[in-house]
Amino acid sequence: MNKRFYLPCIVIAMVMSLALPVFAAEAAPEPPKPALFATWWALIPPVVAIILALVTKEVYSSLFLGIVFGALLYSNGSFEGTVLHVFNDGFIKVLTDPYNMGILIFLVLLGAIISLMNRAGGSAAFGHWAEKHIKTRIGAQLSTVVLGLLIFVDDYFNCLTVGSVMRPITDRHNISRAKLAYLIDSTAAPICIIAPVSSWAAAVSGFVEGEDGFVLFVQAIPYNFYAILTIVTMIAITLLQVDFGPMETLEKKAIDGHVTDATCALSVQDEEEETPKENKADMIDLVVPIISVVVCCVTGMIYTGGFFSGTGFVESFSKCDASVGLSIGSFFGFIITLIAYQARRIIPFRDATDCLLTGINAMAPAILILTMAWTLKAMTDDLGAKEFVAASMTLVAGNLVALLPAIIFLVGWFLAFSTGTSWGTFGILIPIVVAVFQTTNHELMMISISACMAGAVCGDHCSPISDTTIMASAGAQCSHVDHVNTQLPYVVVVAAVSFVSYIVAGYTQSAIVSLPISVALMILAVFTIRRMKTRS
Image (cartoon, rainbow, N blue to C red; front, side):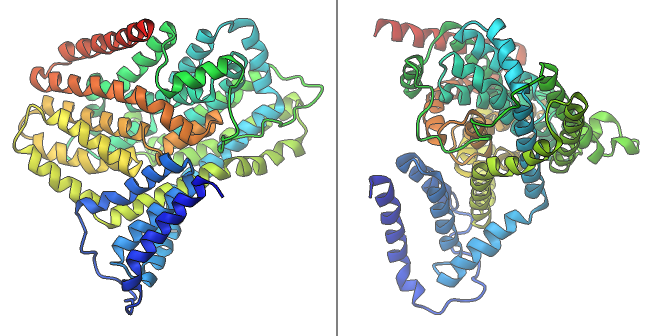
């Protein structure tokens, strides 16, 4: 029995011992609103889960303990109330939510497409092409970044597709799985949050009331410092070959041939998945699935927004249901891929349909973590996390107006880090920002909305319970905790420069001034780190 087992047991014992006096009392069938509602206690359950995950390096039990702790606070210590809240208002509620179910269907179908693409030999064909054209570690990393930037429709699709396609290439060039996960994670959300045609743009636009949400989203792009600087940083550290923190250690091991390790817990496919011996696959067999899924997902999203009923493209995208659109798009993407492969006769039909089951099996670990992360968020919602943050932001808004973008960036980071959700952070902060500046200062409203989006993506990047972080680990087949630990130092550096940039933007209220300054500061920071490492 090792340390990883002892610590969760100790925590469980502590929680149970604190609750035992209350458990002895008669439990009410429906516990009243918790006494700690809308207080800082609402953010403690995810903090407990995050700390346990980082210490024990075990995600499942850590998330579950955070869920139990949140239910315990909600039920005021009632044993029966805690159990009912965990299941009725937790797991069952999130799994019967239409949006969540749509995302799970999308993941399963996408896993099936990836499995089909690999089994048919599309990924292998790309590998043969890459052997001739991608000769260096720098080239492999830049190719990963470019592919990630091209797949801007949705972050889930981005993570899993880029990981599946580029993993054999980065392995061949001795790039660690942790570095691949960082490259995937740092292109997925950042490109989605600055791409007007994406599920994230649709979500953000939907949170803006009384304004044209899509127009505001486009106007706010130059102020989205964290997303822009993350992309700049990836390119800079790749070209300059700069790594630091835990990532440097794993990269040195990778160069010596240790690309991954035995702690890898998430995968989207079986590494030993067989391809036909007489394989006729070509690059077209990789391109067709990717393009078909992108086109079908975009079509599915604008369909749900009413595009085919006469609504304009931009408006239909801003009003779309991303969950339904992605589910429909992935289904038709799978059908098109299946038909294309059958027409080319590169895989038997039975083997192709078996990929549906493979997709479910391959996605099971990621789906389990996502379900727990959603349930943990439900616990914080029921404890009044939104109300607590909204009240806190209202108090700040009336005082330090010029510094408000920088403050919103920090609040967005903390909320997304604690809850593991960017979209939930948008839903809390953006309406507050609009209410504060809607009739006073339009430019400062755009900067503050960008700060909210940037802070949410930043917190999402370094949170172990974030769905995008989980998907990046799955796409790279990297240990989830290794991904979080190695990415954190890079996030901190970019976040620090972004914070300073929002201070500059708050006073200048000009993207022409603040954006070049932010990029210059970021490049300077990378060169400074490189010089410090050279001297050491």
